[in-house]
Length: 251
Image 1: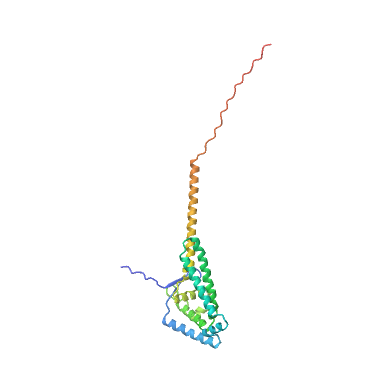
Image 2: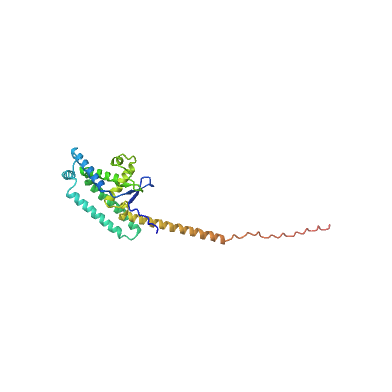
């Protein structure tokens, strides 16, 4: 009996070259302990260098009026507006309506994102977030493998000195999505992205049908020309009049 081929259940992604595949393996207990240790070291270093904590940053943002009741209210309004437009997009019937609503949903999502950045941006520079970034980088160094199961980086330091920054950044992004339970193409699964793909598909379908119609018309025209054979032009017959010479009269 033939042995069944083992299915590789690891999540994969293509590298910056678009050819090489890399795989994400679940972290071991040692990997997690090592990541937590790097987090602790960086957090202590941040505190000693005077970098604000998340709690301190929130207090600072409130004192300066960057966040607060008005910020929360506007954020809720933008979220509600995005939800309404998304529902309208899901219920749209015509392609034209879907196209317009997809653009509106994308704009509403971007507006909400930019508004929330008033809080998220500064919070990315706190001791906790900086330490969490280090933890993510450590796990990335441990979790990325080649197809045969070998680690791409043998150590955290090797990951930090990776010459291909594009690979290091892409790997970190993929690991972050993996740990958050998100698919690599989660941005392509938004309602507006799906609607735009549907619209593109419809446009391509219409273009193909139009091309087929043109080809059919050209084919019919060619057949029509073949059936209509040109008539040969015949020269009209001309009859020469016989001329009789008059005899001269006898003098």
